[in-house]
Image 1 (cartoon, one colour):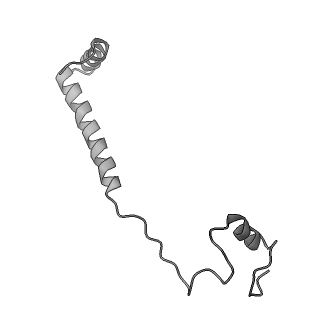
Image 2 (cartoon, helix red, strand yellow; image 1 turned 90 degrees about the horizontal axis):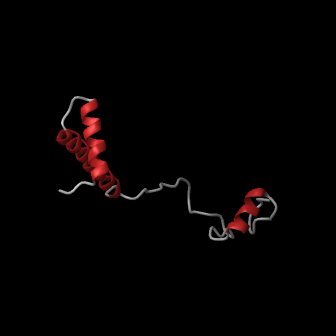
Image 3 (spheres, rainbow, N blue to C red; image 1 turned 180 degrees about the vertical axis):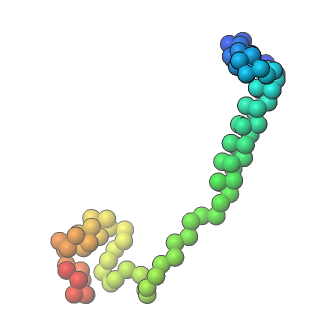
Length: 87
């Protein structure tokens, strides 16, 4: 293993300050890094979020969920909703 001189100097300084060997500091850092990678991999393996809806049917007739501006207008009450008494 080749470690940059300045990095190795930092490792040796840290080891000395804590009464440890440079090897133990490097091992601890590698273990922490490997655990971090394993945690990220586990996050990627989670199943996708599933949304459970309640009620019947879906959107009301005339509501286009792909039309953000139109949906916002219906929600704000600035546009009448077709086929219902919703303002």
